[in-house]
Image (cartoon, rainbow, N blue to C red; front, side, top):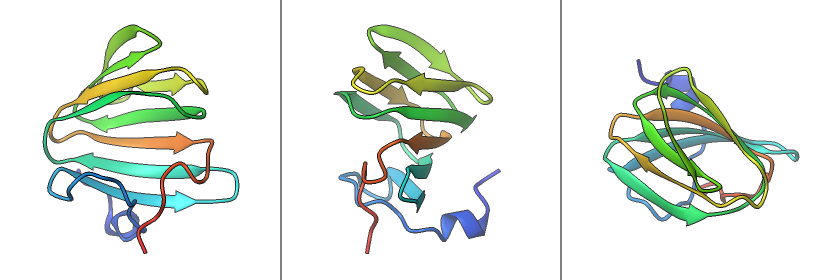
Length: 111
């Protein structure tokens, strides 16, 4: 199942990935950012760090490395990445995930 239309109508993120690879929809408040990710193609996210992040997998599979430990996340799995901890991922096409960032300005919204 895809995300419902009311979610996909939320603003997307201004990220450096083409829309035929990654689709986003986001809700922002003063306290954080919630992002609905749809990966249309396989994707590798390089190692990086930022503020706290929590996520859950809705569909597909992500091989996630957090602080040097690697695990495979599938539908129903969730993860927490503490602030400042280096992490990266290999994401399979067809994956849908919801991520919540403690930094409201983690990614800019498309205008």
